[in-house]
Length: 276
Image 1 (cartoon, rainbow, N blue to C red):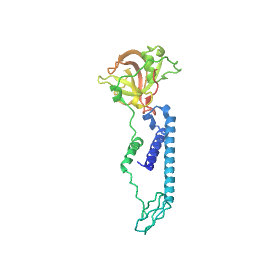
Image 2: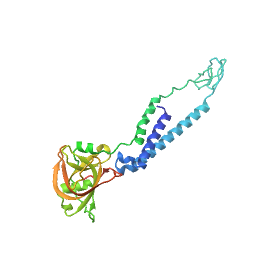
Image 3: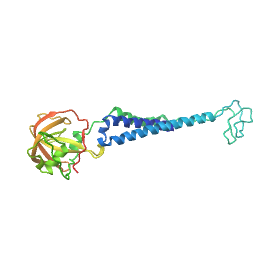
Image 4: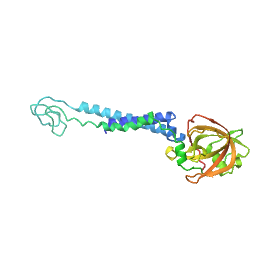
């Protein structure tokens, strides 16, 4: 791959990063807090690509001005100043040799196969993968971890609370901070092979590659039809019921549902709040 091709690939990668960071596309891959780093990386790649292309253009112009052309059919020897003593003239390169027909050897053309490297970039921009959903949730054990402490819940009823936060308060806090409070959670539906409905959020530390589910079981006034991967806003109250995840024996608390309604997929489908 020559320098021009390298510059083009760098430019495309930089533009793809900037496109993802300036839209919500990057939330399918990394946590929201990494947006400034993506913008910086994309900008750096674009600047590097443009600088590389400028340098190569300047170098090509210098070579073009320094290259002599000659006519004739014979061969000659150069004396360092680009003239030959045969019946043709050649271009001297300072080492005493020249081509009598006034032409230089052509550089080999780069393989076009290298341009296949840009195909994943177009896939990244044009075909964004969906966020991890119910299949991953039912085949991966819950990642609920014991928190160091709990912030005081804000006033209001019902109080909006993160699913991971509720799960930690319900299991490790034994629901003490939830007593007498109505809470509102958002998550997607996952149904176990035995028919138990879960409300799930995928929690992540850095990127989608390390995302793991945190699950709460649903009981009470559950909608009669639950579609896996459908997003629900659920209102309910704490219940002492709990179970263990059959995948990794992790803790799964329950919520007694009083109302539920379908909602669109949120802008950021991942929950970044780890209970640690």
